[in-house]
Length: 193
Image (cartoon, rainbow, N blue to C red; front, top):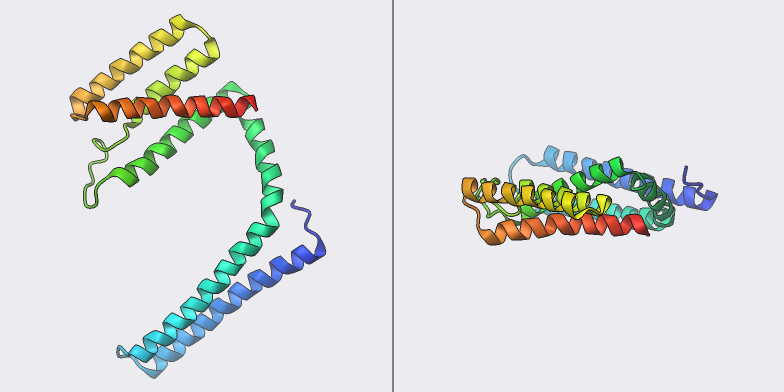
């Protein structure tokens, strides 16, 4: 699939083997330390930590090697895939919804206060983002102010219901709406490339 040269394939196999070998040595060190002492011991902890550091170094090297081997090949494959997916309207709609939901999950995780689990009231609002994203998409694909206007009026109604029911701030609603619009405009620009 990736058409690696023999040297690239050898590098990949050696790197994978190096990580597996480091993991095996790590397991051996842990078993031996556990056989020697069952009580907490600073020297035992140091031995385990040092070997875990070795695994971390091996893993880091493997990520660098994978990056060097795969980056050019993945750029070509991902660009072709992105253009194929974004070439039809149904795929663009799915891409918009997926992007909005992913962005909401990331931002809710980032903006929700530690210990607080009220995702409904946290920023951003998925309902508002999706409604404004779809309204923007309707405006862009139909190029009709009437269709776009009706879609935006419905989005404003969704926003007002969100604001009334969940007691969210106007700033949260406006920022959620703006993010929904920006997602569509960004994806639309990608499809024009």
